[in-house]
Image (tube, rainbow, N blue to C red; front, side):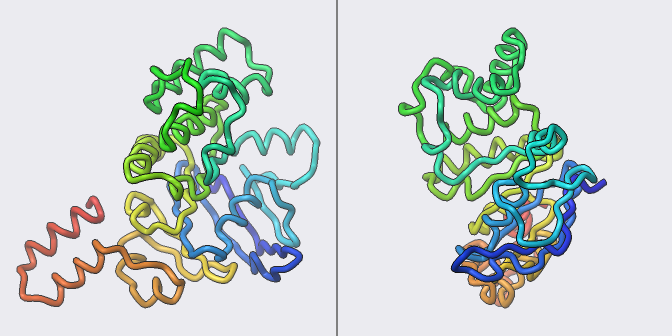
Length: 270
């Protein structure tokens, strides 16, 4: 069943016409979807529209078959927004607590969760993301990857059905990227996950990949089909990963099919 349904969505900034130019899509409950595109392709704008931070120029967004009305303060709209959590690009902009524990508790306090249950959730989800030994630490003492893991713990503690990562690894070093992607990989099919990124190395574990360019969806398919379509990637101003360049070199050489198959398995985890 589709947990998200988007119908002919359009959005314009004052200085950018057709930032989103008629997007329609469906995302199934428990699906792990990557939305990729170069800077300015519309993918981050789409993320903000999906969680109600921006009001569409036209078109509709449905969450669990209910219309999401951005700006509507009714109880029904509030309940819909609570189904979605978003992790932004800069981890430093997301912290409001003095300690890691305080930060994970922030969303729970806003939802008036009982204190005993709140403590249980903090302990449970900090453990899931591997941050249970950091609860009394100041966020300022954490690495970028650790901060993003805390942000994810806060979303999980609020029991959101949908997690959107908006370029959540783009400011991290390789270790931080591995940490965050490891957490997300472990959540696969337990939550509906939308990973917004321009880094094609992040898409191999996705169930489905959506490519955006010029505010529109230009392709949709599994990671292998998308990554092996160099013409598509170049047309969308995306950088072909070195792993795919290596695979193409192997295919154009006299190296055995067995080696090619092994490289494919390493790249695509299948």
